[in-house]
Length: 233
View 1: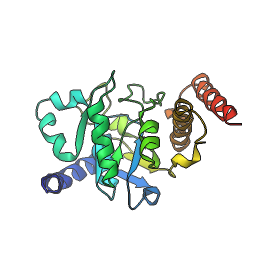
View 2: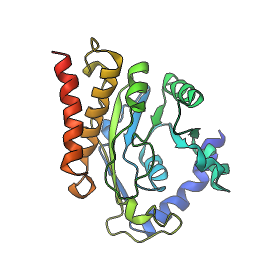
View 3: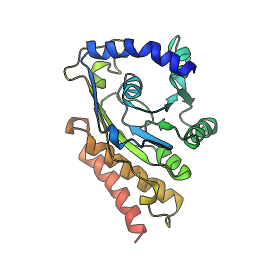
């Protein structure tokens, strides 16, 4: 109940800020499952990403957020009421994993940024395997999500200063990837790697070229996916 109240109070202010600094639009919301647990996996450019996503997601969605955000004055007190919970980077956080799985079992959406944090350059970083692991363990689909423009509206080099951004923030939701698309006969590590590579490509396909990494990095991802695919043959 308190989550709804906080969102009801903040939504007009947040919408007003986005409109003032360039706008917010989304496409592909029909790709978000209407019922049941599912994971949203966006690229992460700015602190404006989670509230922008929250405005465009038509269902209850929980956000896995870096624990340091909960130690920032004021922000750290507010974000738990925006359905965010902390995860400690650099180690296996079993409490965060347990919380994430509880929300999925409750039939809610879960948003996890597979890069593991925000990118300073705006270029898509390699994905960590946590999203794939959660999806495979809980047999839930993953929706690839591409965000653009937020790196210009609130760049991480100036995380406390908003900039007017022509075109504003754009969010694109892609078609879900289902665990049963990954060969169940493969060892778990290979399934996680293959799922992660497939998710990476799905997000990359939704992004414009200036948000994509060098050809060398794309080749490394493609090679890993090819090795996993060959192992299933």
